[in-house]
Image (cartoon, rainbow, N blue to C red; front, side, top):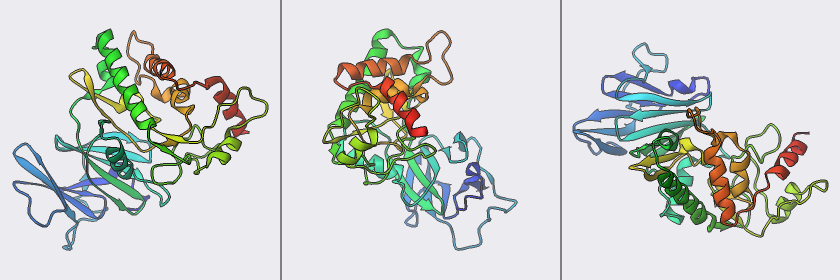
Length: 319
């Protein structure tokens, strides 16, 4: 799919029960799946199926009968500027569309890696994924629940502590999986703008020696210790990426930026990232409460915090 097509038009409806996901995959609501579909899942009394777009003439992106999908069945539920969008497909699946480049590890690969290496960590199940031109498509099983942001104000103090402990336990499970390099799960760049060079979204893989040189500043003291191993970490543990069901952790979502990071980053990231605040703010609650408590709990578990050092280091990277 061409980047000239707005990201929010990546999914279009071409009939009451048929949608095009990009240019190459067709989604149908049917009574029963058949052998021609590449993926299928039940939704109530019906099924949704995916198959390659028919060889018969199909509506083009400019066809007057192809309209942006935004109905009660397939609806746009989130946009991330011009680079990403998310649709709900019925009640049991979502479709995530992202800008894609060849050096980027797909979220589906990262999820599959985490499911294999850390099956205790609750994450959505991948139904299928594919690349269509300059965009990646990921269809996931929808996880029942609401975001931590929406649940937080209804929870008791003990329930909040329980969720915090569950998330930190997941961090510890992930951190026990290590690598010799700072990299994503496939050995490519990590999608972490906070650590990247100024103006870039990702940081190229670094070995231990390269990392020590990259993070060291002679005018800053103390510099964080760069250890011999890097730790698997989800650096975007904001309240919108944590799903709660029945006051328990149901899933951690949005794994695009997960990878192997320095030990110090596990506690430092929630110290410095406003992206982990409650957004929108919850009336009567400090918008930084979640990330402060997350950072403190991670520090208690032995992950050092270098927030002040990081802010000065980051200034030097932008010069």
